[in-house]
Image (cartoon, rainbow, N blue to C red; front, side):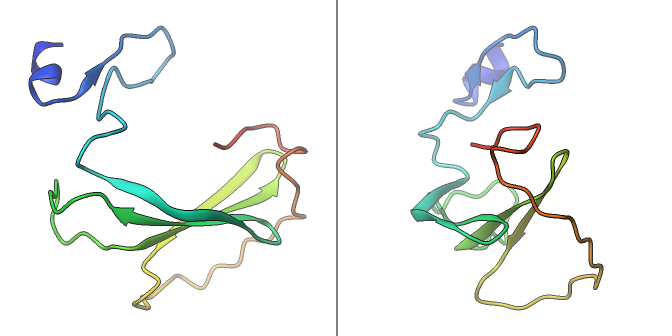
Length: 110
């Protein structure tokens, strides 16, 4: 706990299996924040994320980044993060689902 809090992180012990006890707070200078509104798509939603500050944990950060969420089946969610300004190779794998709405899914996304 001491090492966690010394890094400026939040410590929160929990009984939830596999949940992290040490994590960056919401107002941390690291990471990304939503830029603009969430856009509804045919299969889910899309949101643009921008880097919070110039601090970097790993280097070569991309900003902005687009997050697309697709509700594929009642038990399967697909999410995709990509650079909207630079194309990259993507494995040409088509995984089609019947498409469901968030209300029909057996999971929740916030």
